[in-house]
Image (cartoon, rainbow, N blue to C red; front, side):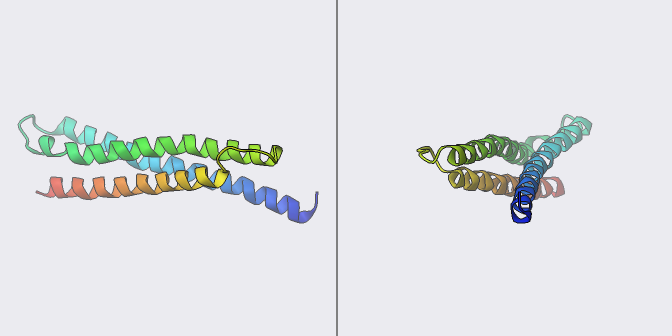
Length: 127
């Protein structure tokens, strides 16, 4: 194997690592926010109005977590399609770039839902 081939292989492996960490980060952000809200609600008095208002930010975090988890499936489909493209030149399925952009969009949406949920949560708690 030449140096350029080895370099390309190592770069590819590191890109998979970065992608996996991005997926985990989105799950950690949204899942951690859910746990934090639930822990906070456990300490609030039952008659507090904040408990009624926190449902919407919580829903944003749940959606963000769901989208981030779905992105793991898309990452698998990206790798599966890429493998099929390399092994079978006549591969007729969706190209790996379709799944890649779909997964990247989900990661971005997971971050958007986290940011909106965090902003909305701060607004609820500040009022």
